[in-house]
Length: 68
Image (cartoon, rainbow, N blue to C red; front, side, top):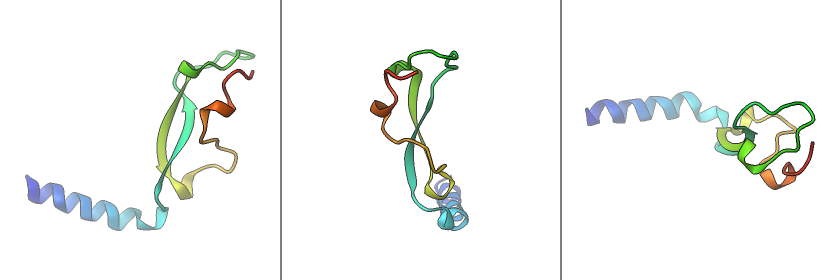
């Protein structure tokens, strides 16, 4: 079993080496109603590859909390 897990890790790193490191982004934890004031419990952090991070994505939830 350890041999398989090691092989999977090697293959994963080979296939994803050009995607860049993993970075945190803020996403909605649940559907947010239109015009709702954003609360901390409505947001969560997810990890994505740096090359797949969208240009206007925020990485700090404090920038969103309290805004509509």
